[in-house]
Image 1 (cartoon, rainbow, N blue to C red):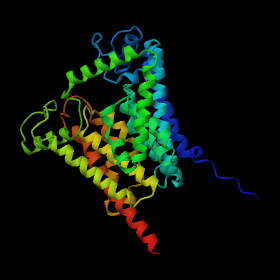
Image 2 (tube, rainbow, N blue to C red):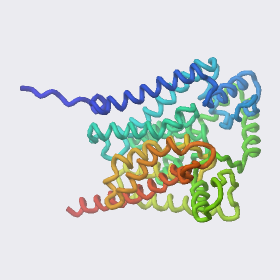
Image 3 (cartoon, rainbow, N blue to C red):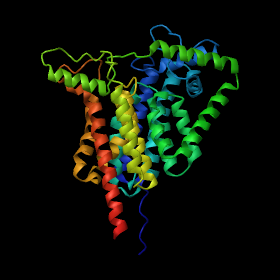
Image 4 (cartoon, helix red, strand yellow):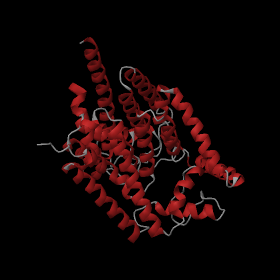
Length: 406
């Protein structure tokens, strides 16, 4: 009797249930944005910016009570198809596309980049997708650009793992021209693979040039407006930010009990704090480069992209809970493959659990009144993830050495 072929991994029971959860979330988000287009969403900011741009006005001026549009001029082309529609239709389509590209990026990473992922069991694939959804949900629900940004980054990493260098560099160029502050991710990848870094620079120049062709004078004017806006908002610190500074303030509040909620809007202590991100950047670069020498291409790409993401979320500017969508595949990977780090496997479990569970209780503009350390939960998750990544890299290097000897 002929055996039936095994079903495709995406068609297995638990994986189908996980994909169904993504579909339900996408539909719920689209309905919410269509029915309440201006409630708990930042899409009206993008919509107003496109409308101003089409009218020949500056998209970097405040409109009513809306927040400022903060993205570089080429990004307007990404928002354009949604911004020319009405708020309900444009918002709903934006939400569906944001969820779609994020899920697509997660699936491409699973299929082509994450070490050993194609051989994962049905349950492990489902856990990866569900954990990814839990971590990404906050970044998608308020319709921020993090979904599009994350999807582009994930696709770039997946294509780089496949040696599709030009596709990878184009996707990363789109991400950088959407949010230049995530430079740490391509920085580590380019340090490891300079030829890819050169392609990235060429891709960015190409995208900027193509975006300027329809109206060169307006494009130059928009760049001036964007730079002016950046100068005006430099050093801004909001209570919603969640990064290593938040973690430091929380620890300080523990050490000095009796005070109220941690002063999350406290400005950085600029006489010493910049040295810490700089030192950690060199550590990430050095550790990533050293570990990647012992690993195959796919493993090295994922390790470096994940370390760059850790640095960005701990020390990058304007990091909020929704920004942690960018860590969704790496935290989910650490949760699913925690045991591959040997004695440090608990750090992978901790990172994944905190990222997928505590993120739902750690929002808001102030520290949680019942348990203030919740405000620092996501930075803590990134510290655990950093430890797991280094331990994982060391363990894989040892495994490779043992294979070579045998």
